[in-house]
Length: 287
Image (cartoon, rainbow, N blue to C red; front, side, top):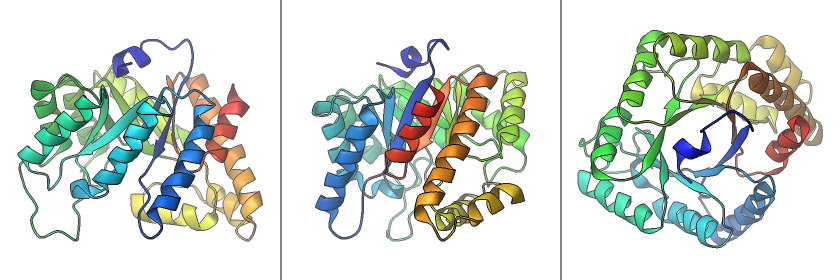
């Protein structure tokens, strides 16, 4: 099912999960464990499972292995990430062919981060906007894009960032998934500004149930996501108890997701960090 069909109406909330290809040592075991987690996610009948891969196509083979397994054996709908930074036009053409041959109809089109461990960085595509312009002309794929309620780190202003999102819509984007955030007010304001700017595609809030205080600090450090002191302290008090932190993360994310749906969001996109329990518990709590 294509994105335009999945997000056709608001009658039933649309839930999706994001996973990433394992890396490092013991890859086979890690992939095996991921499929066990995916089987648990599948019980919630997600509209989509999105699968990342690293900048410049790193982890591409593992990512495609996961995509094939999801589609052919677990029978789960899948949306591969598709980054373009440091990728040649030939590489992009070949990757389009590969995923279309698998029967994939949707991708998440991103610029991606520049990898630090390659010798040649191609400059055929410098932005997600350039990528989706190319995809629209050279494939039958439907594509989602990224959105940033607290603005992209490289954008001068939120308004400039929203203008980029509007251009992505004009070039065929069917839906936008937001970066993780913890303050719904930022999403509400962003959503309203997008409406004023003429953005009509569904904007799906991305949330991450926190499973450890260390994880929370890392997210804030790497993404620049804003977090109120009260929320930070809420999780800090469970720092020494993994079980209590997971429970607190589920409770916080459940309240956050419920309010987002009440606001009118089409659905929720869960950043799972390859673990099913927290995200699936949130869905149970709000449905």
